Image 1: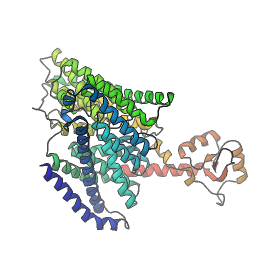
Image 2: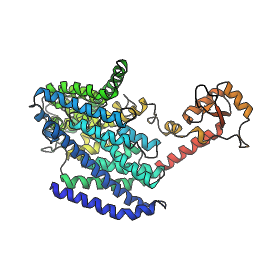
Image 3: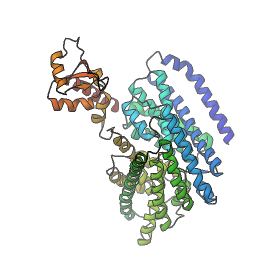
Image 4: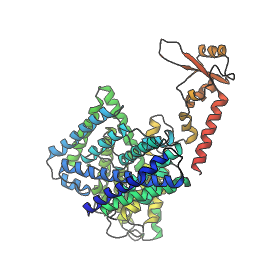
Length: 562
């Protein structure tokens, strides 16, 4: 089956390349029409899906080299029988490799993930960093293969975005096309990684593009289906988690319990996200305080993970084995609570130590354990009106994951597609709705948008906020030779008063400066050095800034409603 799948994938990619080659050469010199873009979306879906599949297999390969077992669902059971020094040393060596890769190939030693893809879609015409993106994929692969407690969806999404960036650079495509093609790549990668075509398409729309425009729907669905086909050629139609039987809601009287579970999941998701950000801040403080080289930061994180895994091997890797046991109800109340606490700590260490990976898999494991613990308590207190604890575990999985991702729609669907259990719709939907409402209020709407907010990128507030940072002052300046420009003498007076703008600034800095000065224009200067006087480039008029801002808002609204 595997060999046939691999040969089919290779032949499919080859046929797509032969077919698309002449068309892409033509497209480079002509505007894209709808059919042409759909063909490109199909090709990008095949490539991104293949990349996601290879990444998944790469994790299994590294895991086999490190621990001697390639099955993700058997990792912690196998690792529990290894000598303690191996469990300790493997994450340390993995952290060392990650630290060196990120130090050499990224400017800041930080792994790129979903947040950077969202930023690329909103502010960079669908582009992301390519060199740092490839380094991040390699670092995350090593992290996940050597025991890092994170998930594979983050690096897979960013890796797909790198692929679409290459295509966009070659096509020289505009912003709308760039964002749509980025959505196609992301949808295909998620679908290929999790065998979830519906959720993959909706994840790209809900999380990355953050709108449901009709013009983007068809190509994204095409790419998502292509990614799913790639997955099924290799793995068949199997779901990620196999449940022995459908979990049916016992009575409608049980629904209030899922409202309560949703509230608990929202709090757990908020605690998971905040603990991760706290770990990031604490690690940065310690690194600065003791002048620790940035390439050693993942090493220390690996040491902490290894020490923790000696006693609790359940935290190693993506955690699918423990998640499966929770969904099957194969854990007791004490184990569920303890493993959830340890997993939260391990995830905070991994992410705070900048080892790489995503948050979806840890959120799923935390949710399943939270739901199981809640279900065990509920069914013991109210046995006559309660169903199986497994139902609560499944609903909890969706509840915590949805609040972390800030994506209730796609998360609800991915739960169904990962488990194949569509009979629990009411329970999952009720839990997800309440958990998202609570969890997203504890941060800036989601884990990813909060990451961006902490970097000073205000996407959570909407386009009326972040669009200001995309419009450069230098592009709107009226030059001195322009008859409508401001008088030079008045410009120098304002400069001496400290009322001026740097030519490299954006409207995010310009509008507050206009409010402070009360002037209809501000001089724009080039600052070449601390001891060099500013060079006058012209003036920015308030009316020009407002006009450019309104055009950007109108274009965004048109794209989102087209």
